[in-house]
Length: 456
Ligand code: UDX
Ligand code: UDX
Image (cartoon, rainbow, N blue to C red):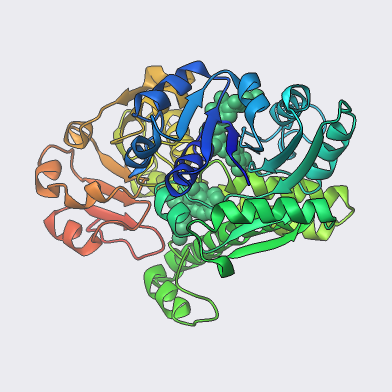
């Protein structure tokens, strides 16, 4: 029976996941540890350091009962029966595999701390997305431990999406647990299954070998990202030919074999996972001599890059081939709605390209302005950060909508238009707004993958 669960890494994955485990397993003590003491203080206060709908409520259920947050990682390791590792594994930016492989330095440091401070038998669970066969490497580190310490390494990739993390954790499509095909490996799998079985139906808990679990996570993200790139490639054809990508998406999505989800054309995917995981997969394929497979998946990222560039090119073309001195209000900066996260957000590239065109960029976002300031630090002199979308659009020549916040649907666009330069342009990078209505009130509208509504 597991009594003490620890998670190292109190980020977007570790924090919400542990809060939900604590809520459903009152008999288990759940600790979340992180080297970042400031982050830990925020979690302890009951106001999480990340914005995620419903998260604060779940955290408050456990605080003071069976959920605690600490910056003393080493002491927490000594008490734990199960240790989830959810530290970040960004794309490596130096040395071999730079720009593609995962940077595993935090992971390895964490493994070494576990080795040093753990006592007795410990189950170590990979939560971070890692290259296939990392568990094997971990096993080797742990085998050198000695001192009567024993470790079992499991892979339990997390499939939650930001913005819906709590719902995804409460009612997952599946929980995936990979472990060694040895008696002790199977026993460890059984312990972890028992935790999830507190609230997840048993038939949704899949068990596999470790490598399958690791690869499934990369493959799932690659498939999802591929769908986005596929529909975005179709949006480019639509813009050239007069077809409407919403109609095409509906027509193909009603085929049950294809399915309706993840067919929203836009300015490209962002977020901490998709690009990183695909690049990781590409690196892996090249490593194993599978050049054709590597190029196949690489094309998903290439298409994503193209989509972002295409968006700005369309703006330039529509606005008489020059943006110099023109004020552009960028609506949204987060990589998707309902999060303050801007990692790999398409908005970053869009803003940089607009600045390069000597436009006067004014960014607005309900949750991500602080991160935007940080991400655009080096060009901040050319960017205005404005929490109020009405003020952002005042005096603007164009609005570029890049994040699908629902609040942008209920703005008073008549009022917005009255303060803008004419002709007024609206580039809807998410097909969030009704282009006909906006055109009727006087905007020149350019939705993604749909015909322009313009009088020019
Ligand atoms: C992370 C990984 O990026 C992702 O690949 C994986 O699938 C899940 O874990 P996320 O939770 O979004 O995702 O990352 P982040 O919000 O950056 O949180 C990681 C936390 O780990 C940070 O709070 C960081 O301070 C902490 N950390 C990092 C440690 O506690 N120790 C370390 O050595 C390094
Ligand atoms: C993703 C996976 O969904 C999740 O299972 C995994 O654990 C982590 O990576 P996340 O990045 O949080 O989650 O968000 P997701 O909803 O998948 O969106 C990723 C990006 O794709 C966003 O920029 C989103 O705007 C974009 N997207 C998504 C589209 O452009 N069109 C779509 O139809 C769907």
